[in-house]
Length: 196
Image 1 (cartoon, rainbow, N blue to C red):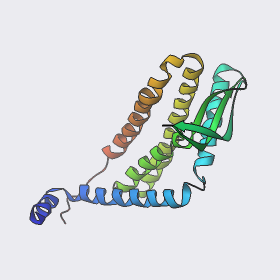
Image 2: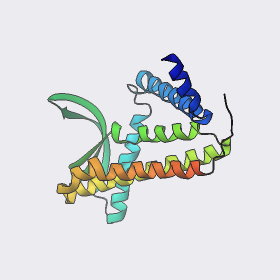
Image 3: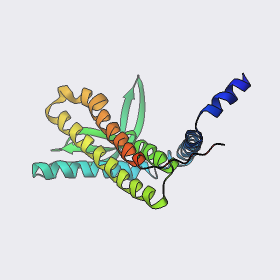
Image 4: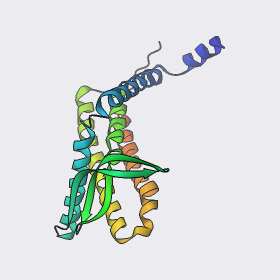
């Protein structure tokens, strides 16, 4: 059994093994850091969620040439499977009516970290990584804001399509965009022929 595992390991190219080791380490460090230090403090989530809510309201007001949309950060009740939990969210109002709650889990942080982890773990020059990290993070944030704008618009005017767009359509768009950025980044990577 151990020999077959070693044989299998030797058949996996060095670059893939190296990437998988780095990715696993990155993932573990992030999960420990987030779970034990960042989650309860809301140090990252609170400002990012507020930013997404405020930017979504701004875009809707800009597109509609109005000032009727606004975002407020507050604690809201969430009912899930018969349990009540309290979570912090950016609450979107239209004419003082609550339209949508953008919770911390919807602020795009996990997707940004996933994108960053891929870029950090792939071999490339430092400045190329920095360029893709900055541009990719801005693009993911922008796409997430557009996703929230679309959800707010659907909730307000076409609620019949809201659930489908929320659970499937907009997620597919956001993940496809991230995958496309990974693809563009990895196209020009030159892998060395190393065997270890």
